[in-house]
Length: 190
Image 1 (cartoon, rainbow, N blue to C red):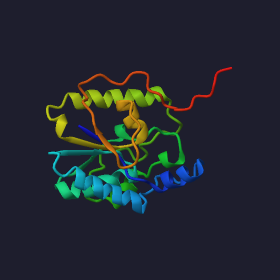
Image 2: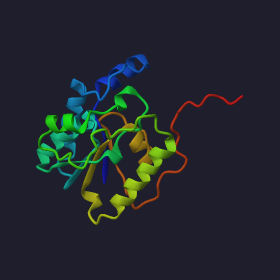
Image 3: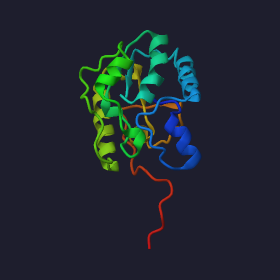
């Protein structure tokens, strides 16, 4: 399967510039992020994709939309592939609001409030990734799947850090990454 990190969001742009949480819940894509989504649609057009799974965050749905439109396949929303809840951008939009914004997408199986109330520990994100890995490995056609997700979830799936709009292949039948380094710069221990 292919894992695609969503395009640049308003949160990503401001956080990169300031290194401070700008307080933007469920941010949309920037103009650059929209271009990254279109570029992904172009790059993935000939990959034989037959399934698109996306996180319910707006930035992931906005990234998946041009790909789904180009390929003529629906987006399947799966909260399991959401971002690790740690910043204001990880406060989602209610299912009812998402259903109004994307009437062509089925949100009926998604809870109205589908994101956690408190920060997720690393091990919980890794457990979600392990669950998703097992679910995908059980599908006979997992190779035909695109998953539009986030930095933290993709890190938990692969051990790799992707930039906005970047994608990579992932074999869910292979071993999970070991010893994931969530923070690149660990403070020295006293």
